[in-house]
Image (cartoon, rainbow over all chains, first blue to last red; front, side):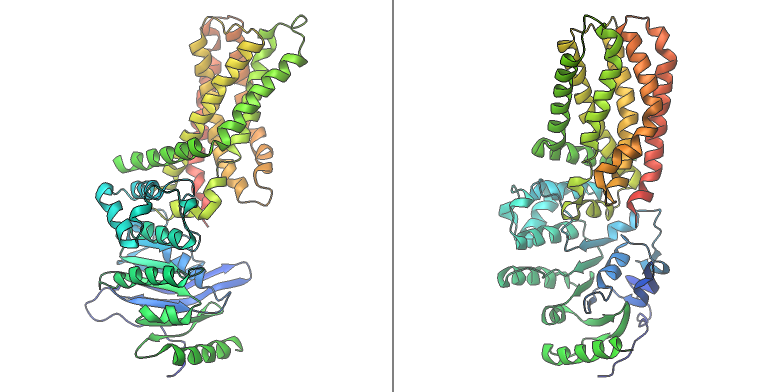
Length: 253
Length: 226
């Protein structure tokens, strides 16, 4: 396996990519968190972005989700360039953040109903029970979010992120702080996203869990993709060696 | 348009539901209003000054100081678990979010304003004059302008290191027109002057409220976007 800073791979002829990023850069003063990243993902692709602390993974995810504006570069979702004055494109994106993005004093059902109304969804009476069933929270609908365990909160966040049936799902460290059972439940839900229709981008430190569902992998170091390519037949052990090699090499440049 | 008002309504519903559950802000504002009324009662000799001569200023300052206690916490619950970030990643326009939060804040402050008038009427044996409905309308107009500015600057202050302690410094200078016209109109109504005499004050209060709401709706996105 060769290490290379790969340019954005072109989409297959006739297949419009769901997500395209060109020269994506975000600076915080003198710090360049994301540095000229190119990316093209088709429907159904699952990209996992690995990287050490401070590599700019969360900033990249926030840029792709439109909650952070790039200093330069552009993002195209579903063929439309993100126009930050408009908000309609946000319906195509679902974001699972490690922050939760819910109200601790509202019940599980109230949280989903509130966010559903913001997304203009009309069939919430059918949709909410479906999502709660999907993430295994059907029996917790009446519980306030603050009464849930960390794993359950994470599943509530996932239900919220998937409520509006987005084309593009962005996952920020979804396994952080979860016990093995909660991780397994979350993995089952995430694997069900690979239905060939949804595009997923996940950022994580956890090599084994991140590799498991991915069909494309990127390693981000100092804001850049130090390597990006297909996962292929790589196993977790081989990838761990490769990951350290890439990070060490990119980190000493 | 239906979606827009649906989004505004969703924010109002959520904010009021959270307030009903936590009672964080309304309890602080109501307690302040009652305690201020009691303290003013003991600190002012009503045999020397007539209550209706000084009540207007005291009522408005109690509403402003009490209101700041609540407005300063507007974005506190939003910051927990990144809830506001979740709202900002939805398709809801930023002005709809602002209008929703301002409406919820207005409803809470309006309840407090009614309580303040009730407390002063009780402790100062204050006669509300021949037009109590107009008096309430004047207070509502002032409260609307106040919460529009307060909501906007609460968002500004919540992003700073000083947090809610910064809010009065930012808001007070901008409240001067509202205080001048509000106190003037309220004082005249309490003294039993004809409603026609306060029409220009009411127009100015309405203009201030409309301007504050429009400015807040237009500027809110620059405050919350990164």
